[in-house]
Length: 67
Image (cartoon, one colour):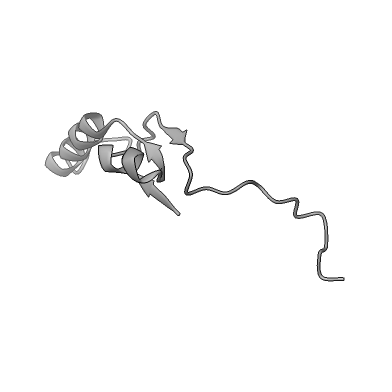
């Protein structure tokens, strides 16, 4: 299970999340809403994966355990 925005409750719950700059996200969204002709229309903000206990270990998909 994963979430977005890395709110404080996510840490307490052990939820893996994507940390994003929330204020910058809001600012960019407002700019695009207020000026529909503004370019670029697609914006990529810095982000970071915050791995916590809701994410299990990666499995090796090259092995077939269905023998």
